[in-house]
Length: 389
Image (cartoon, rainbow, N blue to C red; front, top):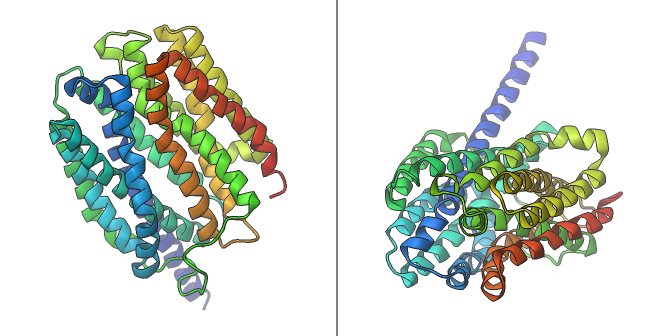
């Protein structure tokens, strides 16, 4: 009898671990594809001869695609389950990346980026739904580790870009290799995804109005992800135009940012245990603001790199911790609360970069990064709203 139950327990643990690995790989795919796009933005900007304002306008195609996908993603995940939607999005997302590399005209890039934003959000919602289900198996917070894998993939994508861009590898060739790699990972791991989502079959509505607590958490996520999105899309351009590094070091800012962002997410649970959620979020906002202001005040390669390291530390914990708090909402189900906060935050992630382009056109990139630093301060000021939630 003892051996029978022990065997069943071991099988259950192994099954949960298999699900966790599979979902983690899909987080990795999402991060690798997105970072592969962002690390080549300076090259695509030069290739299409775009000004700062023109680039800002082009980048608006991403949030447009995201907004179009919001109702579609929710309905599809609810009707068909996150597993099917995730597989579809994980296939189309890297394929669309290849078409970005093929774009030779601005209108073509805008069109492809709209679809890129659509698949990106569909992947984001479905993979986080899978993560919520896996987390329920473990009975403890593991969301930060999933987002850590997303950041680790971003770091890998940055290193790849750091190598292929100076070597003169065209974005299309770069993206084709990334696409093939991602599709292979989907083929190998898709069978191990969670089949039945958490709370499947409940009578809760597809859409629900967020309460004040969820809205406040959403604003914190929005502020943090404005900073994160800015670093993804503009760190290379900042090192190119403001720091004025050689082409070899244009991607350095993105790489150092991703290194501390990835490391910070894997250390998030330890930090919360020692300091508490509120204190960690407050410190995160301070790191974002101080890091950006250091890069603005001293636009040279070493202080700018140190500043971007601080920004990576700052943004690393905000989203996973806010997602964790949203999942404990007393007025909404974990899935609905997570979707609401994720949506608000991800809009900030995509709206921030185009805003930077317009501000840079009116003044300079240094002023743009100063404005972004204010969002870091906002995160610190709003952190008290996370107490006792």
